[in-house]
Image (cartoon, rainbow, N blue to C red):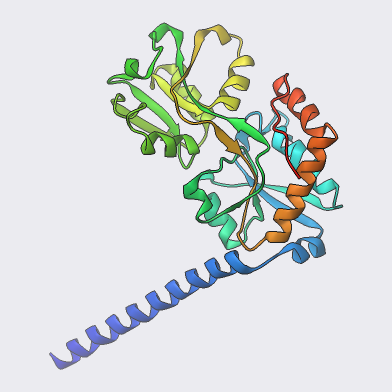
Length: 280
């Protein structure tokens, strides 16, 4: 009996030790993210690493030949061209983006990334460079023209997205009507299910929905419905300690806004100038 008690005590102490090490490690990672300025490291390696969901049209996505293109791809390259720094885009699990940033796997989140109070607790943001909103996309055949018409229906959402956050934070706008919901890794998969009738609605970024539907042969089959969610600000996300990187990005966005580059990139990808005037 005594040996058993000793073994249990040692196991408990070992478990407590490992838990303490784990928590200490997490605290150290968070402290580094909040205090360490990595601009000199970025300069030394001559490369900044940007995390993205490479299926988010038209912000950052892969063409059939595998080439990565998009609004944010062009903008990021234009920003760091001013500093002579190369840009390396890394595909990540979008639901893990803040963890990847905190752990140092990536330097920036730049892919139609929405500012929000919840995210600002852990992430520093650049100035806003583009506006967005969450809208409901349905098939016209289902005759769904407002949130109430989703009563008992199935809604699709992207995991870890600002749309999912809005959906849960403001249940009276849509959630209280919906029968059930399905979370997807990418909007591409969600659209496949919408087209197949497995879901009847999709809460999605307007920039994605507008671009996707515009490029479909049966574009007239879709219905786009504003639900009343607040307008969103797209910005670049970075660690709170990276104040120099933040200043560099903000200054570049200001210069690109002033010289018309933001306007040209917007017209290239949206057909119109949707850019936001970035102040100094």
